[in-house]
Image (cartoon, rainbow, N blue to C red; front, side, top):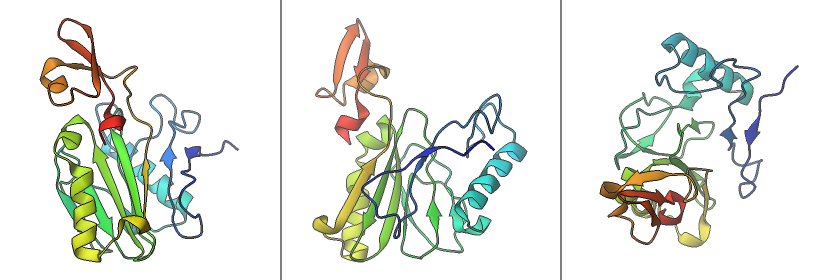
Length: 196
């Protein structure tokens, strides 16, 4: 049987945190691969099936797997067992047994764990979220609502488009002069991970 593949961050204790970045898993999900969002290629039925597969793989009930409608903004919500999918680009949760999910393509997923207060956070940050300082806003929310201290916070940045292959126009590059380099007139390569 083909195994479901994912990248597991090594900074989180596996007995405390379920974490990972799913791979495409094309062998298990032919044509377009595994995805938790519809995009332009998958039907709602296929996405529901993929989400159910993920819940089963993790040994969770469907209501323990939380998603958001990502809008490339800086809204960060506090999630619990009863939370529904809503527009946001960040989620924070203290309830045990909940799994927060971030959908990415070239954007970054940032996973956080406050080991003293047992609070997790998951953030979606493309160039717009990075420009809006969503990561800093999430850390500030953790500080103000959960008394999170920097020495207790573990942070993982997922693989994302890098300065070697993420092409943007001048309208984006102007916000990130230290993380872009011009390749042609009006075209730049941008390293989002360097800015987060």
